[in-house]
Length: 356
Ligand SMILES: Nc1ncnc2c1ncn2[C@@H]1O[C@H](COP(=O)(O)OS(=O)(=O)O)[C@@H](OP(=O)(O)O)[C@H]1O
Ligand SMILES: [Mg+2]
Ligand SMILES: [Mg+2]
Ligand SMILES: [Mg+2]
Image: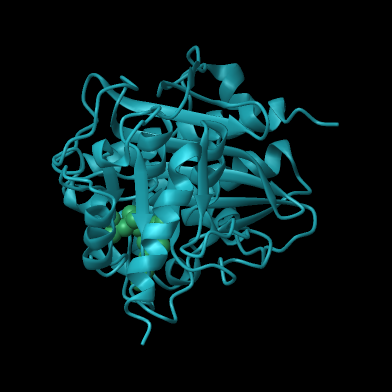
């Protein structure tokens, strides 16, 4: 049976390489932003990171499929944008040659880059080896100067086996507690940038994000919490992505008095997994929106491996094996194992009171 050590190694290196590119774009004023059909933004950073990561996965594991958020159609119609991304991608490499070689080295051409982006077109499902990739999660945060994450997970027969989150704007220090401002005006200066990884059954680790060989990992775990009223809870920044009102009511029911930490991206999962916060609530704002697997796969495994539980609002585990979306689930509730049930009961009470 595989211990997934080579998959974890490649995933960590691939995310680390992509972050070199996203940091360059984050620190540029012009981020090459276009609007997608669903009106959400995508930048040259999202496209470039997707190309680099898919190239790495296809080099190391040629038969694996990838469910990636982005696709190259708009780029084939917008040559100027495509050129701009290629200029970024072609110069991006890890500064340790054997690590870069493990990812297949540089992409060959602009066309090779577009092809790589389009290889993220797997339909997903519960058969075989499929990677879920969010090249920049929290694009709105990325544009605003907040938190964002580069997210990659391997699913085998619909179960998440490996998860990696690169969070360039989180503090390196795992125990630096979140406060109400942690999600705002973030930077990737000194003391920032963390790379979190997990393998099913083997726990979760964090290490500083680097630019070459991987730095040494430390084990991470959720903070033991005696009483939920002392908890710090995280939620999305955008009110359109999760219901701030419902979340405030749930927090009140649990006796939580600290203000919520509003933070973009799976940096929320990363933060609670390493004990900088405790609970992540994502209550649906619409009856029709289906959460995307790339927005949750890595975070789900990392939190569970750090001693937490992750379910939907009904208390059911997230089902990653039904396609590109979590169509069998509604919302997300992540909390330390011992407290999770109490949180789900509060969620049910609040949502139940609104059902009629
Ligand atoms: N309506 C709706 N409901 C729920 N979720 C949605 C919705 N629309 C978009 N998205 C997805 O939210 C992803 C970002 O989630 P965050 O928790 O980071 O939200 S936020 O940016 O702080 O608001 C964001 O991921 P990225 O596109 O990778 O940034 C989207 O996939
Ligand atoms: Mg997006
Ligand atoms: Mg996302
Ligand atoms: Mg994204």
